[in-house]
Figure 1 (cartoon, one colour):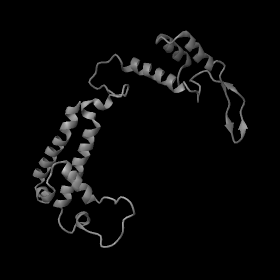
Figure 2 (cartoon, helix red, strand yellow; figure 1 turned 90 degrees about the vertical axis):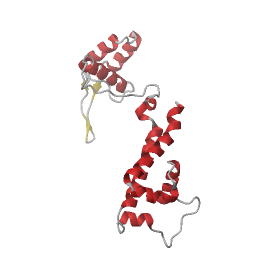
Figure 3 (spheres, one colour; figure 1 turned 180 degrees about the vertical axis):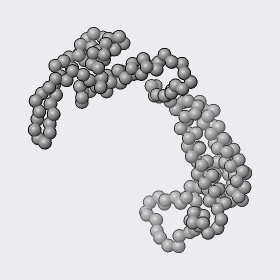
Figure 4 (cartoon, helix red, strand yellow; figure 1 turned 135 degrees about the vertical axis):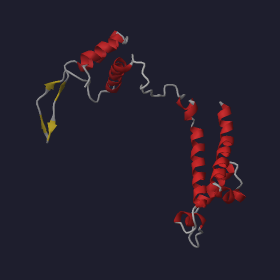
Length: 197
C-alpha cells in the first residue's frame, strides 16, 4: 500500500511540476469505493490511502514511490552483498560483453554438438544411439520444404563449427579431443561477431 501523502511529498521533492502534481492530487481527491458481492453493491466508503486502481498513471506512481523507498533503504550502503540489476534504458543491454545474443547462439550450438558426441560414445543398444543411427523404412513427409532430420541439422552445425563431417564419429570417440575441436570451432565462429563491434 502506498502512502498517498508520502507519494505527493516524494513527487514534489523529485521536482514534479506543480501543475502535474495538482492533476495527480485531483485524481485522488474524494476517492470512494464500493464492494460488489453476489450481485449486491455495498455502500460507498472513502479511500484515503494508496493510488487509484485501474488508473493509467498508477503503475508509474507506484514505481516512483518504491524506487525512492528502496533508494532510501539501500542506496547509501556500499556493501559487497548488493544486488545490481541491469535494465534496458537505451537498448544497449546486449552490448555488454557477457550478454551478446550471437554468442549465446554459439554456446547452444556447441552444447548440441557435445550431446551428439555423447550419443556417439554411448554403447550400442542404447535407445538414443539407436534412434540417431536408425532410418525409417516407410512414411512420407508433408508437401513443401522437407523437414530436416536431427542428422541433417547436426551436419549443418558441424560444418558451421569447422568440424569435418566425414570423420566426426572418430573424433567424437575421444571426449577431450571432441570438446577441444568444438571449442576451437566455436571461437572461430564467434570471432567475426566479436570483432565487428
